[in-house]
Length: 57
Image (cartoon, rainbow, N blue to C red; front, side, top):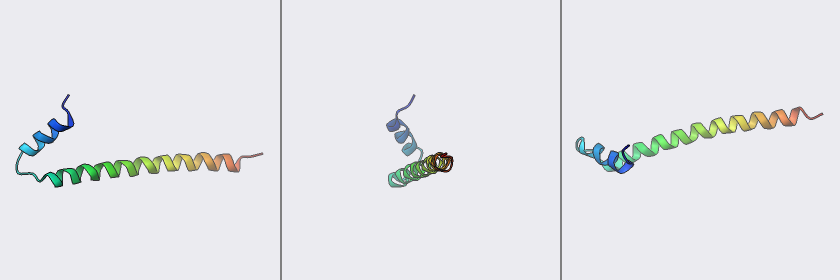
């Protein structure tokens, strides 16, 4: 299995690729993944809280 540095080095060898652009794409994917995970967590938490609040006898 390749390390992140090896992948980075191979990617840069595939042509004249700008390092800042590479990291920009990594950040973009990371932010989108975080948002998606956060929204799923928020939705699940909201459903659990509303169930608890409205089903109190």
